Amino acid sequence: MTETTVHEELTVGRVADLVGVSVRTLHHWDAIGLVRPSGRSWSGYRLYDAEDVARIHRVLVYRELGLALAQIGGILDDPFVDPREHLQRQRALLQERIRRLEKTARAVDEMIERTDMNDMNDMTDQSGQTGQTGQTGQTGKSGQSKHATRLSPEEQARIFGTDWDPAYQDEARERWGDSDAWKQSAARTRDWGTAQWQEVKDETEAVEAALAEALGRGVAPGSEEANALAEQHRATIARHYDCTRSMQVVLARMYTEDPRFAAHYDERAEGLAVWVRSAIEENARAHGVDPGTATWQ
Image (cartoon, rainbow, N blue to C red; front, top):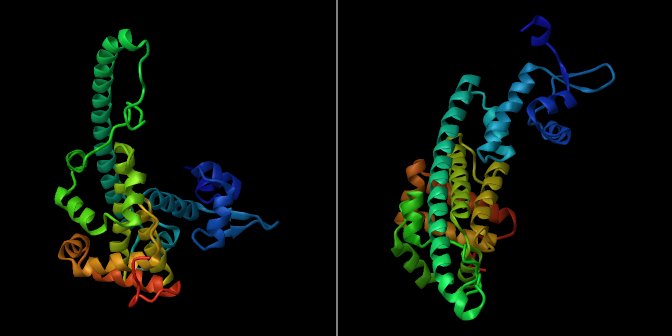
């Protein structure tokens, strides 16, 4: 690499081409202070140097891992973390992401195999039915496609390797089965296959990892970053049913009052259950919800 290349300053359009994002995205990152170009041309155009481009690549890796832009900015601007530590942290997170994706691929392979077997069975059944009815049906009694593959809780545990206990499902049904949220969740997840379950699982794990990382950096509940994380947490719940901030507060109480929830969070980071509850409550308070009187509504 020549001396000129090392110190070359690039326009926003050139950088957009190099890193694979839009000019609009780079302008947005500049506006929020995430990646600000170090220089300007004599005519006022933004100019990025090698360090600026390196920061963009770090942003892209963290974004791929599911972190919000506010979190990424906080991590990159942490004065106690040097570039090598950033790279080591990113490599560890990427290895974990690869591990999850490989598990997803294996699960999808298994579902393909199961679907092929179902198709063969259907063809066998239909060969005997066609002569009697003159037609072959494509849907079952429920109207769902014969290709729809639903997973029982036991299958989810086996395929995804979670610590799922079928008793949790029974307990939840007994407690929430008559609620609108339970019915909404059942309707939304009825036709989920392996890919959807894994996607939701990955999103949840990414948010929980970000919560633990924020706790480790000393992010205060009620801060802008903590509030953004609380909203991401609520969004993962909303994949199943519409979750208001008041409902989220009710759920957060279980994170410290139910030993199973507390253990789940504290396994990620000591004190995380209390921190998550506090972050959720402070975010709710900022939006006009009193955590002390919040109810399931």
